[in-house]
Image (cartoon, rainbow, N blue to C red; front, side):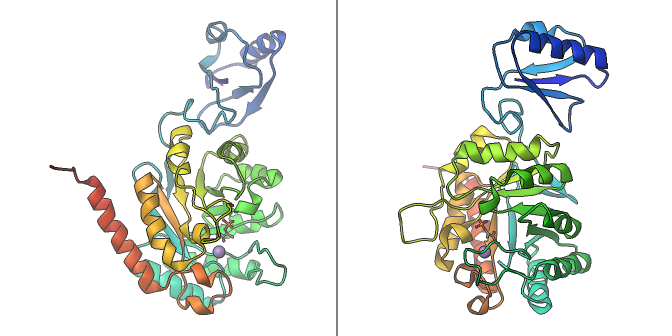
Length: 338
Ligand code: PEP
Ligand code: MN
């Protein structure tokens, strides 16, 4: 249950509500919520709602059955739209976020940035701190990579996305980027989620590759409950028994997540497939299934990429993807006539 207090609620009024809740054997927890002065998250639900509604200082009382109280659509029926300098992610917008798996050097990242600007793409994603399965694989340029991203942002105005892997680096990442990515492997790094919640910057949260949807939304809840309501979810494929792709894109998760939460959801067909030739068909499927956008890996010379070259699109392939998605988007607006 979510209890929101009026802006004008006094300490005495709030204390009376707390006393009532505790005396009826319930547990409560204050959470930060941008829209409401104070909010209490109850862990037990056997309580008299009209009784609380009638108390002084109360704005709304909502009974929410989902465990993820703030992420749930039950308490927040309208879609959340993330607005970054007038660029929207969510609801009817379909956002393309593209860039290299890793920032490799100045020439490479500027080549990509210029390509994106030429093609009217607003969001650049590039990894500076890379979570790699093997300790011998390229680990990213770290702070040097962030500085290059900062330079790109300054010179092009592109909106920058990059991953933070731990609570130490997240402050540095936040300094240089517009959207902080939390990767699949970190989806249940709870201290990192809490820190991302405190930072008040948009967060792109990727689904853990073995996470259920409820676990995914509870991870988003960690960020929301620290007072950061700017969370973008990313479906990036889950582990399966198949061996024809790197992961299995959970297409059904798109409509399911859209039904369960108000948060925007984008899809990463690059990591889901691990194969360049699968990126376009999976992108189309994601658009049709209701995704709010895509995260696509691109590289000027994919065969020379320091990480994930096999799944990265060349510039020409990305142009083709954009134009085919534009045609598809138009087609989806058409009515079927007999
Ligand atoms: C990435 O986006 O660079 C990445 C490593 O993806 P994931 O966390 O989904 O594996
Ligand atoms: Mn990658």
